Image (cartoon, rainbow, N blue to C red; front, side, top):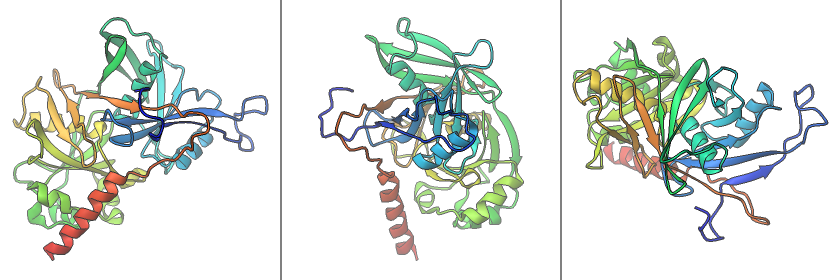
Length: 347
């Protein structure tokens, strides 16, 4: 990845953060932190789902972590810490721009482990190297696949699925998504909360075209999600673009301040388990789930009912004198413009 031309916008920054009054960062501590942007679910910079990674967060207190996550304004910022539990390799903490700590294992963890392996912060032993990550109260296995000493894939096991509440009020759900009740395929699959680390509401939509028209009302969707103990809302259609994919999906999470995610590993795992539970997929098979702006879809392979999500990623070093700029998810903006145009034509 270091062979890219010098005019490529790079995704690693050195910045400084002044310690807030009363912060755990003392005057003796450096007023400088190193952080990186990692594009997950893609080989290419400025694509996929971007993640901010702060490698050494030992001197940062919770308030400073939340402020940094707000400043970066990525869907999630992951802070790497020494483990607090025996058997773990690293402790990962992730925050949204709204300052909410999230405990699902998705691109927030996949991107962090890609950086750890690619930057040489963990030792790779042969083609497959195993580690353990501490996220919240869970210890979860991680496997890094490498070829010729270079990382080629990160595979992360999520928690065993738990199936929660179903949404019975379909008209209210459709209205919160700005869809018609007939757009939801709830007679085929229930709109249900499924947890493999984070509780997400999985909502079946009748077609890809109707899925593209969805435009949730956050003020209506957030309380509906809370009423069924859900965090995010994962809309999916079993009409994907790619021949190898089983579904196309869009993820919204107004309860933690995320509008739309390009690709969401913490929701892909629950969806795979949901499809298997209803006989629409086979356990052990690799399920590919497309996102709206990720050129490389999420791969998920549930074994014994427990999903493992795989990803590739890209990160770049910032060279001297180069300006650091963060693109604002242009692919999602373009997709949103197309959906707005489609809704206008539908009217």
